[in-house]
Image 1 (tube, rainbow, N blue to C red):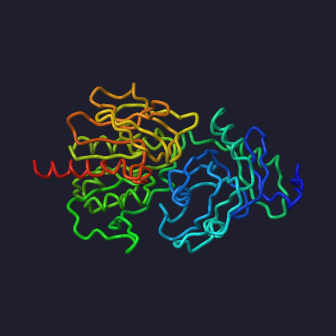
Image 2: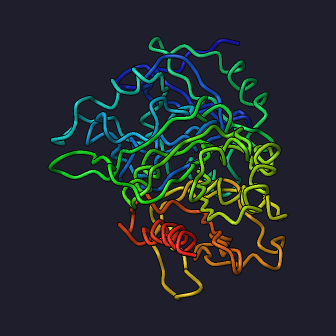
Image 3: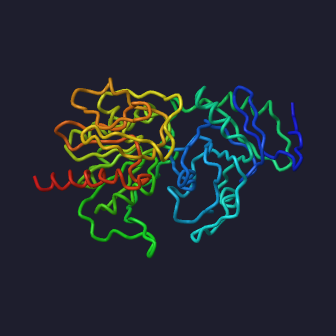
Amino acid sequence: MTLASPPSDKAVHTGVLVLADGTVFRGRGIGAVGDSVGEVCFNTSMTGYQEILTDPSYAGQIITFTFPHIGNTGTNAEDIETVTPAARGLILRADITAPSNWRANDHLDGWLKKNNLIGLSGIDTRRLTRRIRDQGAPNGVVAHAPDGVFDLDALVAKAKGWPGLEGMDLAKDVSCRQTYGWDEAAWSISGGYATQTEPKFHVVAIDYGAKRNILRCLAAAGCKVTVVPATASADDVLRHKPDGVFLSNGPGDPAATGVYAVPTIQALLATGLPIFGICLGHQMLSLALGAKTAKMPLGHRGANHPVKDLASGRVEITSQNHGFVVLPESLPADAEVTHVSLFDGSNEGIRLTGKPVFSVQYHPEASPGPQDSHYLFDRFVGFMADKAAA
């Protein structure tokens, strides 16, 4: 059955969010025209919407922003985490306003159109967020039709038919296809992004969906970075003669990605090289050690998550984006839990006792604290320096 959204006092509703249970949210379509299916999640960050929308870890997801004023700083060519956004769409409370920022070179709506991202504004995001909080992240379809006509039955069927993220390997979809070098470092207000011209160490980063700012942080810490695809073998990594190996963030079910990633990581662990993992890389490392992961009912997505460093007792304000978690009780005896979430007590970091191997679930490069967690990059460099001096 084809239904048209009823007109409001102002205009016809040109956008809808249809959940798999048949719930329909009507509003105003933004960005590209069409429809897109995915898991509907929410992010509580008040800033960084362009970085969020371009984070490869959001592959397969429709992002609900709980902060209402999204788009007010416009968009630019620098604040991106990957060239082609992997998110399926976005949901906003308020209409996108004209940008007011000296760095803006495009309106968010225009940027969405250019990147083929479909969105919806003008709905009660508080109601949607409570629904996700209480019942878990649903499958849904976000649709934009300028004439306000939607086949709601077909959209419900599409949402019901989508298989969901559990069991889905998305790292292959967002990973690079061939090896490349990276030397772009930290940004400054006077000169933009710096270039690392005198690296002290060589890091091979396995790209499960790497954010650019992680690579920038590695370069800024003194590293030459070589990025290899998610499916790279241990031999592929070792032929570059790295001083250390980095396991990147990424989307999807870690158990599915682990089918090809775990054997590679296990072989790299046997070399004694320093290894550092973030987000999916943390989960991949844990799986390689014999641990297990599980899907979270809600996941952690935002820039205000407190994490406790158990060694120092220090609390870090962290940025997070993950829907799966490492089960600490499944970790082997030589894997020590180093960080925990102060929201729900879930695992946020591990290290191997007596070895230069560690990982965290959160994103130290995102700087919500703003630099509470940058010491982790220094720790990785320190491990490489220790190994070189041994």
